[in-house]
Image 1 (cartoon, rainbow, N blue to C red):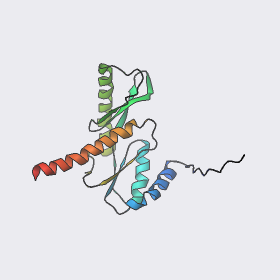
Image 2: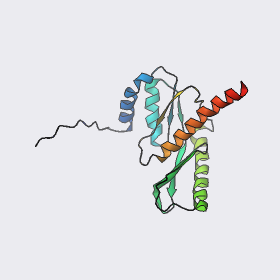
Image 3: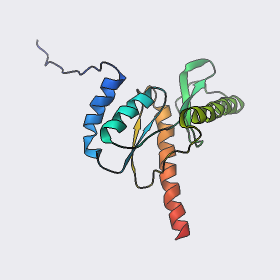
Image 4: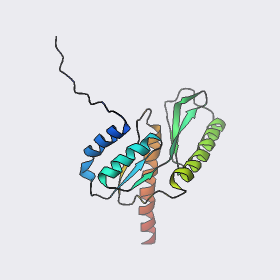
Length: 166
């Protein structure tokens, strides 16, 4: 019995992966795009995408909320604006007080990283922009879900702000 051959493209490193992804995103070149990288690995990925697309680059800070019994087990994530994603399928979720403590610790780390990585600067406006979120991998998706929620809120805030002034 013979099987069809599979063509699997392996990436040499993050740079190679980002450059290949950037080529796939070529239809966005010249459009009103902003590339947001989620540090750490997503910063490098976003850099090469933004460079190829000739688009502005910034870093969106989002942090995994780790289960207290296993720091590798994501129970959710928190974005820099407070957007939070909690995995509804977590086995043995921590109680509210423990969760509050985890969130508080990550809020402090997020603020530290905003200072360190962006010099305290705000994210660029997302109004009327195509937002490309970049990370170097997705394990549970928690961090990406929180980041997407932030992007949705920031787009809506600008829209509702303009409507309330009009």
